[in-house]
Image (cartoon, rainbow, N blue to C red):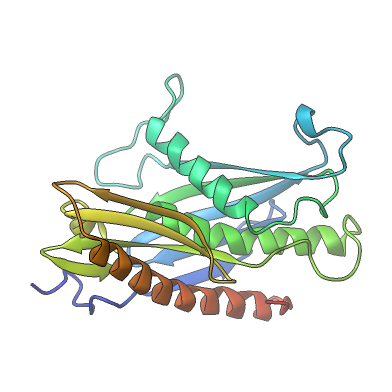
Length: 245
């Protein structure tokens, strides 16, 4: 059965990464993946969590949320009751981004990452990771330019990026929009480093189970898609004068 948007099974949705989307944060981007749009902002503070105070290293934390108008049905703001889904996603974002930052070389700074979904059409968590990774690099470059980090290579291990894959109608497909994600037999979120190592493999069968061969195809297709995302991240950073990736 053809995909809703006519793409091939191994084809990403059109992706655009716009840097400096907001003026206030040290680093920010707007990432658009098909109908999904996520604003990613990185603020920098010199006050680390108490358990890190005096140890000379930094920390990174993330928050994620869907704005009320991001879907056809209004999303309520979690004012009094924590949103379990958002909590799980922001932990994933934080884990993924900490893997790219050399926190032993940042000094005592706190990178606070905010990912706000403006429009949701599937893949919001993976878009958030891919966009926020660029925003983190921009933030560290700005801190360095202002004298907050020593000259030389930024305290980074490399880039990270993420994508979704899934099994729909017996076919493995890359980068699922909501129309596919909502009825996937198996859905999977993948996070990869620029060095080709996995940070996260979240694969869940919604009905029944899936074979090792399907998982292998998820990894193969996902890695190919993420390699394309790495190229886009590097192009955005190179245009901003950061070409060390």
